[in-house]
Amino acid sequence: MKNQQNRQTASSSGFSPDPASFYFPATGIQTSGSALLLALDDVTFPVKHNLCLDLTKPTVRVEPVLTPSPLDSNAPDNFMVFFYGTVLHDEGRFRMWYYPCHWGVNPDWDGHHARQLAKWDLPYFQGPLCYAESEDGLTWTKPHLHQLLFKGSKENNAFNLPHTLVSCATVIKDENDPDPARRYKMVYEFFPEFSDPPLEGLTSGMPTCALAASADGIQWDLLSTPYPNEFIEHASFYQHDGKYIINSQNFDLQIPGEGGTKRGRQGFARFSTDFNHWLEGAVESFALPEPAVPEARGISGLYDQVHLGVGAVSFGTVSVGLFGLWHNNDFWNEFDLISCDLGLVISNDGLHFREPVKGHFFLSRHDSPAAPFPGKDYNTNLCQANGILNVGDETRIYHGRWRNTSDKPDDIENGYGEVGLATLPRDRWGALRLPSHHSSGSVWSAPIVLPAADCELFLNVEGARGIRVEIADENFNLLSEYSGDNGGSTSDESGFDCKVAWPKSSLSILEGKTIRLKIHLQAGEYPQPRFYAASLKNK
Image 1 (cartoon, helix red, strand yellow):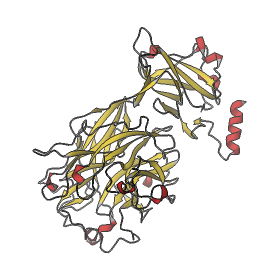
Image 2 (cartoon, one colour):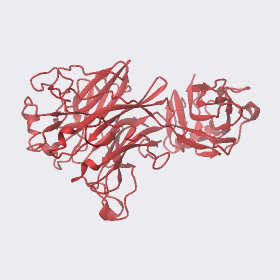
Image 3 (cartoon, rainbow, N blue to C red):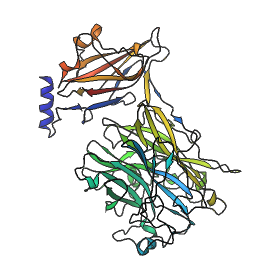
Image 4 (cartoon, rainbow, N blue to C red):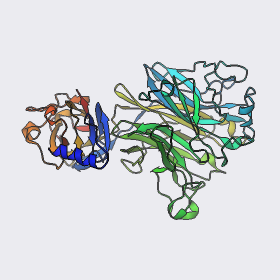
């Protein structure tokens, strides 16, 4: 009856959860088939007793997974490979979309494309967007797409898009789109300010984003430029909670701070519910503190800022992302003094992100440095994008790392960019554990409405002998069939999917009801327990 009242209340407010889905009233999120609950999510696990959080340090592969083509080649990526892109594990293979730089103008650009280079005054050029494939995600090939005539040949891995100066190749595969021609969707950045005359409809001259669609991720059709006169340099494009979301950085150019003050780089999200119609305005997605002194704010401020916004991925119930922790310096005169690490953030609605541990460096530039240049001590800038994915029992974090030289004559040729890889055991972003001065502790989940179908609970844990699970109603009242001596446990010692069983019952009795989980950690004569995540899955 209680759960029935819950659904009636939700319905009267204009929303009725799908009875076949897992529903989280605290966040409004519902997912079908399974639901992932991460230990570091303080909304999903809001009440803790005698537990502390350890964030996991990722393991970095020293060797890059993708590097520029030889300097003496005519390849479109013969200078730098910037990730600013995407890796998908798609139908048994790894696929990468990325943005390169090349030396020397492509003489084969046609009139429309050539006009877009009219005001470009550097010896290297951004774009065109490129593509790579791999069997294992470690060793990549650059297939000839035969789309774009580039320096006398179509034997290259470049896409032929309507825009010439481009970056930020963020791609999703949208399995639910009924139109096969729109199965793959891409958001990329282009630079109209260098076109002469300006591109049609683009009056501000600021870099902005374009939307494209494809049946196979190779042949792309331009759909629209939804924010034609707004600056959008984005980190990621993803789907979460029924929305298509572009997460980008903005300066004070369009979105000023409190009282109309200037601000530096901060993260903002824009979204659509159908990929066709995009809401005017932006959501402040993630921001670092601005200095109290107004003169220190803005693009040349000497303080940490959010580079590119959040590079996010959706896991259904929660979105996990990385942001560029940009250690800023004077942008115009001392760009090479800037460096960038990556910080970790999470979100339940996919729009508003927060740090599980404030100020934590999740991935340091010192742990994942770009290839050095002999005799020089250049900083590394790390770059996040659509690079987080689970493969088997591993979470992979593809990221860009570039040698941050300036555009000064003595430095410009020393520039370099590559794609790196860091890994975690699957979904083990952080663990709840007992500190040394406590022998027992617990954590409560937020309310969960179980689907009207039988489901099971699995734990991602170490030291499972020290972990047991109880179930309560939404008001924290423990249910006798699932608590005390009837509490749940797993027979596994550790693992990513340790199945929980209750001695006298199963979750089938709770179909359609609202529950809370209470997860207990107990020290003993066995490995110390560490709780990383829980998963609810339909049978």
